[in-house]
Each structure stands twice: as structure tokens, then as C-alpha cells.
Length: 220
Image 1 (cartoon, rainbow, N blue to C red):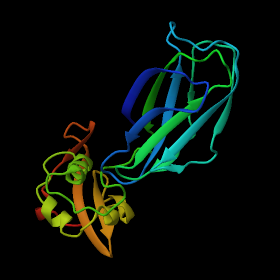
Image 2: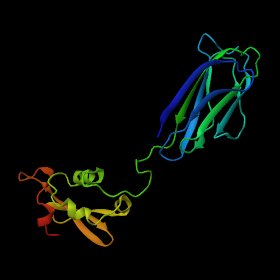
Image 3: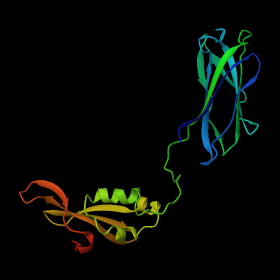
Image 4: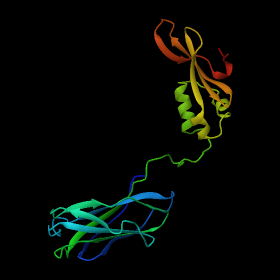
């Protein structure tokens, strides 16, 4: 998905473990992969600059995510940020982030936490079979392959029921003679001619043009 879910900001005494984010994961879309970016300091209320090992704690629906805590060695920067380890959460699960500084001077620090969905990008079908729409992307792609004037697209679609079949099918380009070639589709032993195109125009120039509707074509 790759999106910002929420951002929370406040000033905290982080010398002991304290909650800096309390929110919920996305309400739909199935389990997702998350991380949180934690920013310490805003040029006014900063870290004291001592550095050392800071602790980050993540809980999903009250269950700790290991390592618990995540221990991160900080530099002596007074304003800095860190990303938590990535973690999974299902729909509408509580997500809590806590932090702790080892330094007594960090008793009033501006902390901003941004929860990010970093799930791998994927189609809206999330891998499930989806029926081919008469006006959907699959039809548009087939028309692009055949260039212009395809009139028998419904006959082609009749041989397919899912996107999975389309992905596993075998596309071929066959040369039928010296001046034309065919684009044909093989699926489950069935051959369907998608288009027959000219290689040259009447002046001998190399062009590609759909010359005949599929319905009236004779296979080479």
C-alpha cells in the first residue's frame, strides 16, 4: 500500500518508558506491514545530546513485538530520527509505540511519530482471481496489442474467465506471408487470432495497420 496512516506529536518526559503513539491499523485491506518513524526534537525541545542506547517498544493489540525493546545506539545529535523494525498488523488492531531515553536531561522532548504502511505494492485484486470486465484493463491491453479496429473482442474474452488464465496463456506472433503477420493467442488448446497486420503500406513504407476485422479473417 505504501501510505501514511497517522502522525502524532507532543512533548514528553522520555527518561522512563512512555507511550508516544496510540492508534489503530487500517480498517480494511487485510494484514499489512508497518513501520513507525520517530523524530526526537524540533529545534526548541531537543535531546540533551548525550547520546547512548535508546529503547523503542512496539505492541500490537497489547502483544509485544520482539525485540522488546528495540535498542538503538544514538549519536550526540540533539534532533534526530529513527525507524522502528517492520511489523505486521491485521485490520483495526491497536498499535502502540513507546520510547525511553537513557539520559536524565531528556525530560522535555518534542516527539513526532508517523505510522507508515510499507506493504509491497500490488494490484487491487491482492492476488485473487478477478473476472474480466468488458470495459476493464485487460480489454484495453488487448486492444493496444491489436492496435485499432478490433471488432471481435467478445469472442476472444469468451475463452477466458480469470486474469490467472490470461497470465498463463501463450501469446504468439506468426508471419503469414511476406507482407502480413498475425497476432494469435493460445489458451487451453484453442487458437484465437487477435489481429492481422500489414508490414508495409502501398508505397512500400514499413507501417503497422489492422487491415481486417477478426470476424472475417482467414487463418494463415
